Length: 71
Image 1 (cartoon, rainbow, N blue to C red):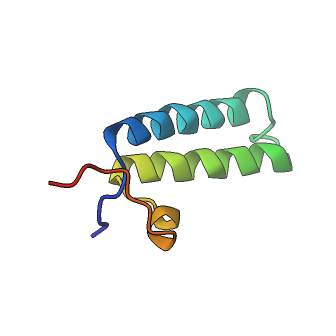
Image 2: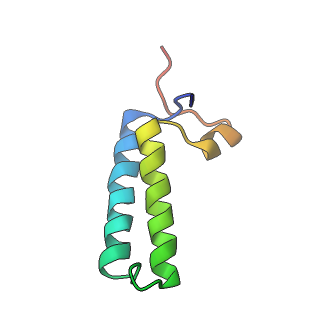
């Protein structure tokens, strides 16, 4: 479905950053009380986790970037 354009290192960084942003949005930025900064961080974290899980980044595709190793 999605063409892979992320390297393993890229995916690891996205996973760590996405999880960190989600935790921060819940713990300190008020996601549960509906504060805008908490919502923004949660959305960004979720997008990073999604792209890490699929191995495909739509912005990479738009700018023709490919960090995945070619076989």
